[in-house]
Image 1 (cartoon, rainbow, N blue to C red):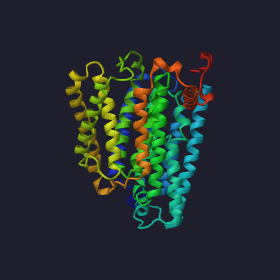
Image 2: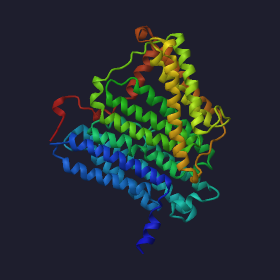
Image 3: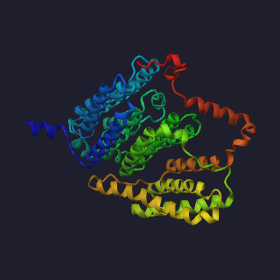
Image 4: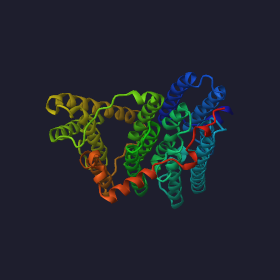
Length: 447
């Protein structure tokens, strides 16, 4: 009887194993940090109880096969996250942050519940694996996938559901780490879990690409405007979640999982080490770069994108959506090389070429590793290129070129009025909700 219940509630496939390994690893790292960081805190033991329950609920969620159990574990995980966010309930700003996140999660949970209800009414199935084996998608199932997409967007802070994430900075550093490295990835997990159905829906895949590129562009732009480390990291997470949605929309779901894994680990590290950010040394790249440095960086970008394609076993510039990923690798490689080439471009070029080549091989190899692990699930299905894919990649290229050549800090005061107005509008749009900001030190309650 117990075996029957377990097999009807859970399905431990390769996606679940990868997610469980990542969640447990990040949870242990955050717990180890919090063991020292929260010493003397009045909620010390309660924090670890809630953290343990949160990790357990996420593990149950990613391995769930019954749609009802998935929904229940999803809601419990978000409820525990909100409680962790409101670590100091006497702090008004922390309560406001938690309430804003709770309202967002409620909207997302209602959308997911509606989607799962439509799946059940359309097929009579309560098993997710049975749903994924449906040969054709009916109109109600299309609607269900749309609701599921909105639920995933709200969880992963995709525009316009981003405000809760930017307003969540009152949480203790360990909570921010587990939130940005773990729970916010829930939207990506949801899309990958139902990927076989999305792969039958080209219009929904294109929708994922559009909202993903928009979020990636906004998150990266807003990150450059922030005055403090935590706000920069929050906007960075928003941008990274947008890129993960783009990868899902491109039909490259294993690449999205690889991005989810490495972003989670890296973002946890950044939050846990954010206290040392004020002491770190930064390279003054200079604006604009010299032409030798710029063209050397472009050459490095070509090398990095080629090594990335080589490691993933893909054609360098294929006539499908893998070329979008290769294009992003080219931009990343070029940007990686610019600081190295800033001072002495010709002398530093061999080192920059070697560095971008190795970086491309490393990231491409990690994507290929996850793709190989998930190969039996057949979720790596590149789509035909369309105008939205090309427009999204072109927007990233133009934004990068603008940052390098048109953005000159010395000429900011001479910028046209429309540029200054746009800057102010973007800066205002990237700010937390007013109720989540502590304007005076006496308003901070640490009891």
